[in-house]
Each structure stands twice: as structure tokens, then as C-alpha cells.
Amino acid sequence: MSDTDIRTYTEETSESEKPRENVEETVCPECGGRLQNDSEHGETLCSECGLVVEEDSIDHGPEWRAFDASERDSKSRVGAPTTKMMHDKGLSTNIGWQDKDAYGRSLSSRQRQKMQRLRTWNERFRTRDSKERNLKQALGEIDRMSSALGLPENVRETASVIYRRALNENLLPGRSIEGVATASVYAAARQAGVPRSLDEVRTVSRIDKMELTRTYRYIVRQLNLEVAPADPESYIPRFASDLGLSDEAEGRARKLIEAARNDGLLSGKSPVGLAAAAVYAAALLCNEKVTQSDVSDVANISEVTIRNRYKELLEAEGVVTA
DNA sequence: ATGGTTTTTACTGCGTC
DNA sequence: GACGCGGTAAAAACCAT
Image 1 (tube, chains in turn orange, yellow, green):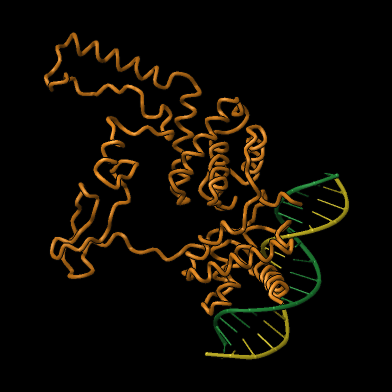
Image 2 (image 1 turned 90 degrees about the vertical axis):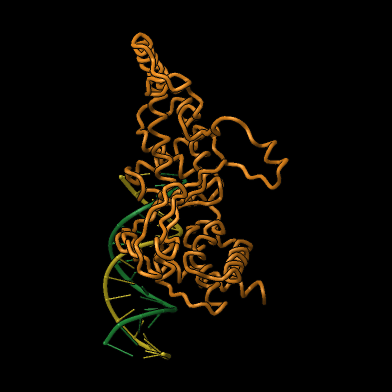
């Protein structure tokens, strides 16, 4: 009754495909000139007019920001930033494949043999036991799924931490790596306040719904993760932006949820449905054009549910203001 | 396994552009 | 006439017991 957040919603995603822009274009839309790649800056630009058509999303900069010179000095450090996203935090030794010494000179054949042995052993130690190899694969999956879901970096870190803990507590036997990794992503997204529904997570994973819910429950219990019931409000920004609504409408939607919360309308209902209904109602109140089917598409919720919820929302609002 | 609640599916009628 | 909206009944899904 209270634990509605586990709920899943069956909805085939085949019809929720959105028209995709053609990225194969090789002619400048501005002047018709030829496009060329600038790999250093990760851009695709026009050779005629210099228009940047496409920018790579990879950021090659450091993970911190500096606002003045002294801050830059104090934050700067030598070496690659560590990350929990690599199974060894990126700190392990790597031996280059080129048989060159530090000055770029070639090594003698005797030294080459030695380096080859070192490489072999280094690799063996690096992925020493099954746990390390397990983690290596899982973190790859977590990264992949997070990207597909558009989740921010900190969620991936959190998911990685959760997975590590599950691994350390020996929760893995009997469960698939993919399953636990998926559950970690789901839990991390919710903890970070940017929840994705079970359905959304499932679509980027290779496991089925049942395994995901089972595994998710299990690791939440075993690790004593504190995952509050999903708050409808946390879905609102994403839905509102997907529908191209104004900030005003978004705020309005929050107020509707707030009013409903005071009336005790929230418990037992799907948070996604509530959020969708609030967004729809708010758009109406702000005279912004959105149809029920639009909302049902972006929220993956049925129109009927939206109708039922939004009726209740407006009533609650009416009670409060009256 | 079962029962109660919620959501979905499918279908209908109404008004408007 | 297509579309958006509102309602209903039956089916399905989900959760707790």
C-alpha cells in the first residue's frame, strides 16, 4: 500500500520513438560547403563558413572548476583524477606497449623480454580475482546504462558505490551482474533525486522486469539503503522540460503536488502518474498547450490515469484555495 | 495462492476546429 | 471528419496477507 515505488508499468516503447535529426549530413546547412572534422576540439565544422555543426559531448577538462588563478593552483594536482567508475579507481600501474625507455630509446632484447614478463604479471594482478573482473564488467554496464538514461556523473558514482558494497557483502552469487548493476543504477538515480521509472531503466538493460524488481528489493534490504518513496515532484522538471513548458507551469505543478500531499492524496498512487497529472493540470492553468497524449507519452503513463489524477489534484487545490 | 487496490485497455459520446 | 477530452467497464498488474 505504501510501497508503490516498486511498481512497474507495462508499456511498449515502440511507439514512443521521437523523430530523430539526421546526423549523417555532410553538407553545411548554412552555405552548402563541405563539412570537416576537427578531432582536437571534437567538432564538426564547415570548411567554407566555419559554422560549427556538431560538438562532441566529451569534456577533456578536469572535473573541478576554478574561478580564479589561486584557486586553480590549489586545486590543481598531478596525475589523472581518480574515479570510482574504474574498477581500480584508475590508480593501477600501466606498462606501455612500446618497447621504449623514458627517453624514447628502444630497449635491448633482454630488457624487452623482461618488460613482456612484467606486463603479463601486471595484467594478472590488475584483474586479480573474480571480484575484480566482476567489478570491471559491472562498472562498464553501469556507465553504459547511465549514459543511455542521461543520468549525471554523480549518479554513476553512487551506482558504482552501491555495486561495490553489494559485491563486498557477497550478494552476487545467484544473481546476474547485469541485474545487480541495473538495480544499482535504479537505486542511485532515486537517491540522487533524479529518478527514472523501473520501466525506463529496464529498457536500457538486458534483464527483465521481474529480475530487476527482485534484485532491487534484495540489495536495498541487504545494504540497508535509504531510498525514500519516490517523490512525484522529482519527476516534474524532466516532464516539464520534455514538453517544453515554462518555469511558471513547472512551479504550478509543484504547488499542485504540494496541495495534494496535504490532502493525503499521494499515498498508494503511482508517483509518476501524479507527476504527469500535475504537469498536465499546470499546463492547462497556465494556458500552455499540451494534450493528454503528449503527457502520457513522455511520462509513459496512460491517459486515463492522468485524467483520474488530475481531477483529484484540481479538487484538492480547490479545497485549499476555497 | 488470494484478495484488494491501482492502472491499463478498449470503447463510447460530446464538443470544437 | 479528425482531434481532444471525459467517462465507464472489464482486464491486468501489483502488493500484502
